[in-house]
Amino acid sequence: MADDNADHRFPPLKNDLLLRAARGEEIERVPVWVMRQAGRYLPEFRELRAEHNFFKICQTPELACQITLQPIERYPELDGSIIFCDILVIPQAMGMTVEMIPGKGPSFPSPLSSPDDMSRLQYPVDVKASLGYVMKAITLTRQRLDGRVPLFGFCGAPWTLMSYMIEGGGSTTHSKSKAWLYRHPAEAHQLLDMLANTCADFLVEQVRAGAQILQVFDSHAGILGSHLFSTFSLPYLEKIASKVKATLKEQAVPMVVFAKGAHYAIEKLAMTSYDVLGLDWSMDPQLARSQCGEKVLQGNLDPCALYTDQDDLRKKTEEMMLSFRGYKHIANLGHGIYPDMDPDHLRTFLRAVNSYRKS
Ligand SMILES: Cc1c2[nH]c(c1CCC(=O)O)Cc1[nH]c(c(CCC(=O)O)c1C)Cc1[nH]c(c(CCC(=O)O)c1C)Cc1[nH]c(c(C)c1CCC(=O)O)C2
Image 1 (tube, rainbow, N blue to C red):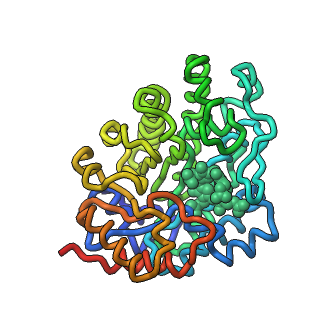
Image 2: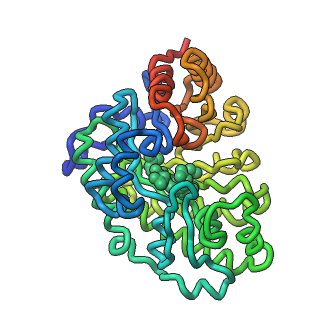
Image 3: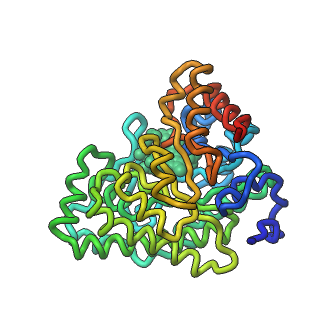
């Protein structure tokens, strides 16, 4: 068993529930954390955000650390923290300009319009040089967490990053990026491979800087059907996990894959090198369990359940917990928490998980 406390640079870990659960060990209570737990639903986040540009916060270790700690300070119920950053720092490190437009989201003024544009990309990426600020934020946060809970590092999956780089922002159809998969499959594979190598190098450095667990977000997996996902996403997700683990060897940490909307691929995802499979809210935990054997599952309350009243929310959370049967489970929402949600309702969710007991 990896001894987390062997890393003597940092204060000893007091709550290792999340790490033990992710490794598939027996646990006394199901751990909980929430995707986007640091974000606009928190007034303390909005206050800091009003003063600074989004990517400036990501690039300033002191600010990124403060924001990472905001939910930890507010909710002692949390069993994990996640470094404040964004998946789009990789396209930036490859030389692309990305802006975060309030009310609209990420925007690329010059997306990749054809494979010829790939010549504009910086590759290979020296992640220590171009993303060193993330590693500094991680090291600082590990110190300030003082062992309260473990710290997640993360990155976006190659397909999700590729789709942003081609669409230039959010999209409902993803038709421009999917067109590449049909028209320019060789170049698409080349781009996905460049991204996978960069993601792997980035995650390795995050662990060396102090990240204790990793998550890869394939937020746009759902737009690919089974065949496209198996061809253009899954092999690169696997490449990341196997490369990170082979590079880190005994320093390796648990890895979570969250492929949103990829119902059709649950069985295949369960056979990858990831330790934990994140489920979005639309996936049935019992069905997933029947397809995933012993794999640790993470999720998956519909984030919109936070809009109901507190009693109903407690009930819905218990139902969700029961459907995982307290077995090889890490509790979470089925996607990130939304900006207009009530922070007190998040607390109700966290407490309902904390007090859930296998009966
Ligand atoms: C697709 C994606 C992105 N970023 C991320 C994903 C994968 C998860 C998912 O599917 O939601 C991941 C992400 N983004 C952010 C985190 C921080 C850590 C945490 O979870 O607390 C994480 C893990 C901060 C953020 N990333 C962003 C914000 C809000 C930006 C702001 O303050 O203006 C935060 C707190 C911006 C962002 N960044 C991205 C979008 C689509 C947006 C706009 C949508 C929105 O506004 O919520 C890209």
